[in-house]
Length: 274
Image (cartoon, rainbow, N blue to C red; front, side, top):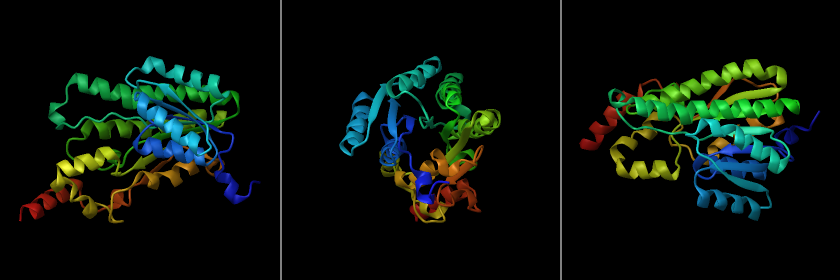
């Protein structure tokens, strides 16, 4: 039996992170490297991807960046192949990339749905399939989907995003059941509103809308990306060896709040108009 603190050690593990070049994905890439893992970052942004690799290297870790477009599902198996060619194996897949369409539900077009399903569900599913079959050869591994608490809570203009995140959570349960015999654990981390650069920009642009966040979150603040790291390391390490098919909401208690989000948003607007 490993000593308890060593259960979270990722030394020697190879982790593939989609969208590991910014936001939550970057924090997970750096954090997994600090826990001892070798990191493959897959993203569209070359400059930010190479900057992430350099940051990990300066801290004594090892990382590589692969160009990837998650809107191209048939290309997903190639990411696993390139990771194995570079590091000899893949132990962990973090499916982090997501598209979001901010439109009223009645304005979504067929093209909108096709795009968000390709990125958020189909590419993630195909990447997980390829990773799981590679993990099977080595007796197991970990797959972690990054979902959202909007799979459970509803707010305006996020219908397609919430729907795809709910789909990921269902997908993870089915994959966990089927791949347990291979030693592959499949779980989901579902953040709430998290202060990435993107969210901070939206908050500045619509202060009335985001003034409500503190009212919605029992712990009294939006998350920061680092709030996701402890749960992610747990789910990607030996510490979670007997955990599979589960969704972990890391949202400051937002999913247990008693008032629906629409009520709170309306309240915030009224308060800001007074």
